[in-house]
Length: 126
Image (cartoon, rainbow, N blue to C red):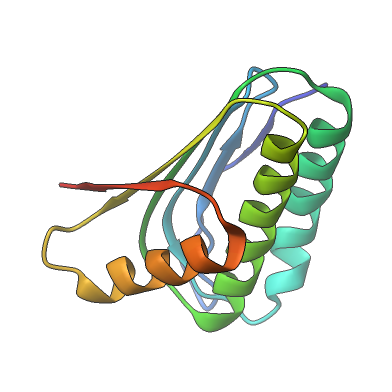
């Protein structure tokens, strides 16, 4: 399986960096607010769906988003749901969410993700 690597872009649409490696190390970083969110995130979801169906490697998902909008949030939830499916298959996963120490909104968002998915998400301040 090929890795999925996309460099983030700034402009009218701001896309995050995506580094999804077939080794099971997954990372999303930067900022995410764009008009056609599905166009950007559907290939990411497709890649992860394939990974979940064919791989037996552990997943470490590192989230380093400084900002993301509501439509991006929905796709992040989809990614977390797929990771939960993988965990339910008996696979080892770890989700690390890096955030600014004083960013209470992100902490609340992560709490919502925990409730929605049942995943243990580690909040790591910087």
